[in-house]
Image (cartoon, rainbow, N blue to C red; front, side):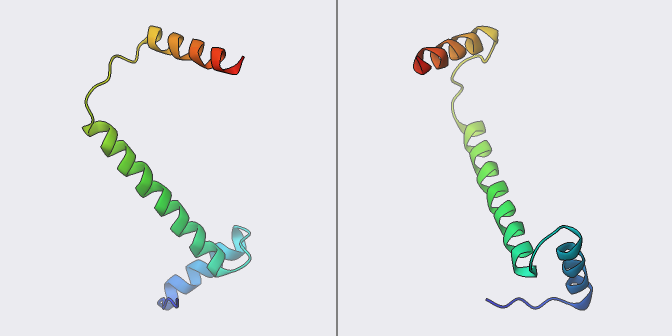
Length: 75
């Protein structure tokens, strides 16, 4: 895959590569794509959660029960 960039963006990418410790511009672009992919997955999960039916109240008792379940599972 080849990507063409205008001079201003090429300069910006070169600056990011040198100042942020990337080996190549491809490494920088791959990281940007991975971060965007992760953001999109998180957004999709948040929207799915917001659209799901309410499961109950997440109060102090809920978290106490959850901690207890985690402790029991660890034994």
